[in-house]
Image (cartoon, rainbow, N blue to C red; front, side, top):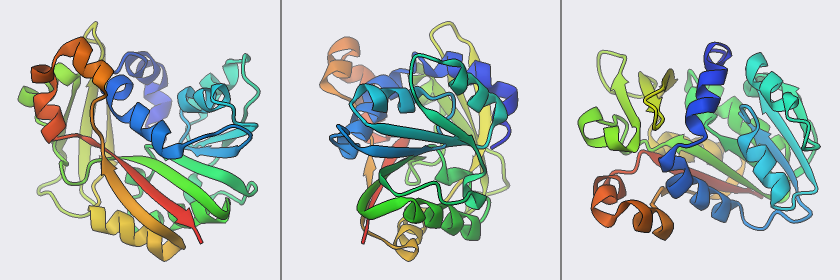
Length: 245
């Protein structure tokens, strides 16, 4: 995940007008998180703070962010308009920071290099949740692991398999583009839906589920139903969810 030290500015520039984020997974993500007014939130893999700031705007009373990339944390801390505490940690090895109503993890779990590391990440999530607290994360859709450029280029994203074959723990390289054709690439590890969900359960979460992303009515109105047809059938992002017992 420290690969983001090299691409932090490029990633921030590309993601700000990512149409899949704006009209796809972000609305579903926040709908799944639910009402944040007065809630304490820990945002793991917070990056440059895009979602942590949105959580403050949605009424969270306490928001803390964690990321492994020094450059991402630097970018997050440079935004002085929000009172957010940021921490530099590897989530798999970080200490308990408190007991939060909600723990979020946008783009974290797929960076686990092994099932053991994935369990460590999930255990940290549980440790930092209050009883009956809620976990919500974002992952690449494990049921649609390779995003073909010829079909997905108009959505400004594509991916390729970096390993010899598609299997548990293999590496995938993804490239994101913006409207100006700027791009940024990074790699992550593929895990099946069963691995994600069973690991969440093993760590102590219940009511676990995975929800494929879908496009909002606003996005359909802006770009047209035909434009989004392939994405709606093959979403490249999924929400992952669980509750602490």
